[in-house]
Image 1 (cartoon, protein in one colour):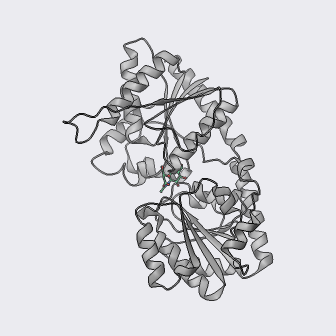
Image 2 (cartoon, rainbow, N blue to C red):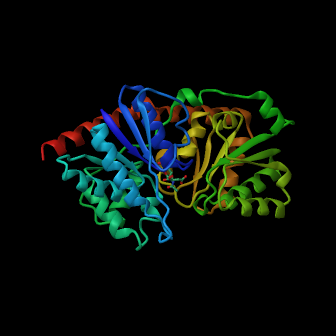
Image 3 (spheres, helix red, strand yellow):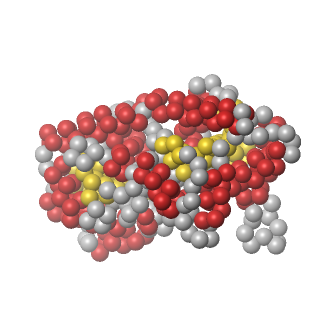
Length: 378
Ligand code: GMT
């Protein structure tokens, strides 16, 4: 198949999933064309089946807000026509689903009916998409897509309850390339972070408000009073300054390392004992799955799709959003006993295998095929 993928090219979860999906499909012999405003962060190697088309946006004095959606739609028309794509798969509804709808309508004037699949990832539904400045367009473009997927059952239900949806929605969960995350333990790194063999907790995110990074610091503060430990904060974003400030106020900044954005996340995860994800909203929690693939159990909130990933009492624990006390108690329970840590680590890894890319990729391929056939037979 010739597949066009539209996504945010940054480190956000939807961009990571889209890029890994494209790489996986290319490895299986499909021709994959990424159409975005810059090279996706994880598209960092050459493959004969991978193509990248940049959406260039002309600057003009009149444009306080350059019209990206129009530029994207025009690029989609161009790429679909000249590369003869079989299907477009857009990740994150805003503005990708509506740009794809516009491109689809334009392409009809060339006698092409391009099937469009939209994957909803999270805040495009739970936060931004619900806002009345976007809602009519999001609803319309979901309903006009030829196929719609969500990354968890919970996100599907939230989509159905928040929007007037007339489309069937298929759940295809996030996935993981276990070979990339297979034991990459770096003993020298562990020694540098925890010279006295302290327990290592870790949080990775883009430090937006929904990630509750303040709660990460508060949980660590409580655990650190009982168990000698260190906290690694990986990533960057608007809340990083506040999290750093809080760690100074609590007098624990010496035990917390803010590492910024890191490419080799698997190496850092592999030396960690516990992953903290106290988000107020999380449609799936890809970062937690990456941790589990590195044998790191998860302390998380019980919001959104997290209960579909983190099995309470087995791969980690779930608590109500904001219940720092309970999260710290659960973290201590896991960390205080070496045998118990090992049991949780093994269970986290075993459960991560359920989301192996080799199991999930065929679901997308099958979904593309049925969507293409349906559009053809209409
Ligand atoms: O929250 C992010 O890191 C970015 C956001 C996105 O859409 O780019 O992530 C969402 O999509 C990920 C991939 O499907 C999910 O694993 C995340 O849970 C989801 N984030 C939220 O729902 C807050």
